[in-house]
Length: 258
Image: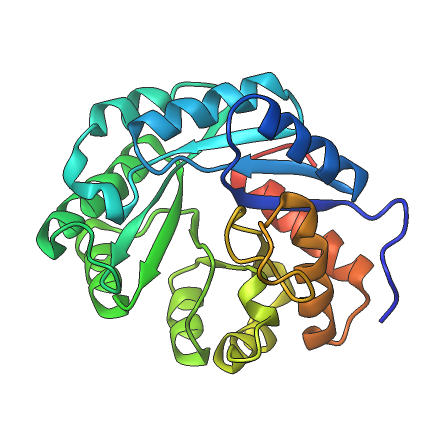
């Protein structure tokens, strides 16, 4: 596998940028590393508004999503998320879904708020960004009941091959984070091997989950290059090919001109 070149472009489709100078610094470092497009992700009404503001501050480089994370499902605010879908910098509903590992919100509330956002994505023909942890069966159940959006990504994919196959059968794309570099992530690596190149997206989930060799540090969008290298090695392709595939997949998913 060869390293990236000056013309290799990377897309970090899922990060959480802080407003102001912190975002400006992260964007500058990303551009220096060849990460020329980013999506900063909303997790509740306030953070979704902040994400849209950050995107407007970096036109043509940063876009945003608006959603309610399962941790924040009890907080309300769906009307804000819907209103933000009309903002030209907002590309998707989410992140939303189910998290039974922490259960910061009651399971029933998580399910109801997730279902409402799936319905919103269907009604507005928007991309949907899903977070699921220890909740695969209920995640699939909600999608089956409400209806699967035409554009669906399982962000920070943490399942194995069986879960990957079920997601792919729904027409979804899978997004791989720095977890794919962790020693304990054999199941995730197997899923990356099984996932077709035209269904792979890349992310950092910054400031969380910094990849090896930077694990333990604060994650940055620039570090998506390390995840790309790991996935390329797993797929047996050059990093330039993997980056080009992920670039095309991500732009297509979000409806952006390449």
